[in-house]
Length: 239
Image 1 (cartoon, rainbow, N blue to C red):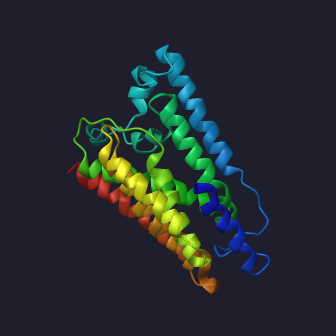
Image 2 (cartoon, rainbow, N blue to C red):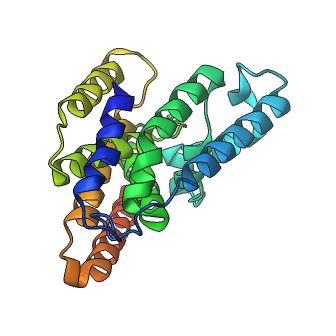
Image 3 (cartoon, rainbow, N blue to C red):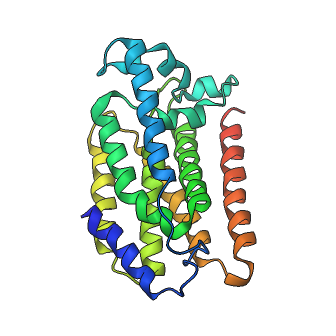
């Protein structure tokens, strides 16, 4: 299902004026950020697995404990956890599922949005997921994973498909299934998933619906504003 939805994005580009995509990126580019992000996630997993001496219980490693998102520790000044937690995974299955989703969703989205815009969408979605965790989770609850960013790509995919006037039913179905899973399987951070989904969709709207005449300024302004708002919300949780 995911491959069909992503292929719709590439197919829809044939209807866009040659030279630039709906987001203002140069047409005909190739995906580079996605494999780099996957490589970084795999590298961090391997480091934690080696340190823990166990590929399944890599979360026992010192590095994992230092980088995972724990709201109480963020309140105490360990702000880096908001982003570093997005590169951690609990065991190989968690890593495999998220990296497969990143590959399936991200390849064509990066081509449509352009490398810089794609990375902006990815990281603001990650920040959105972390913000939801900070707002809704217990201070001592540990969260890790790229799921917030991946859910942001899901939201972004729906927005891009609608902008290209391509069928988005399958993408909505994938999102619905993943939301249900988030609420029904214990141990999954539904807060991070929904936070990433909402923020990712909002960011994608700015990226593909910005008026062409002032496209770059609008895109940068909206995504920058979203990032500032999320940071302020995180700071507010510690007051």
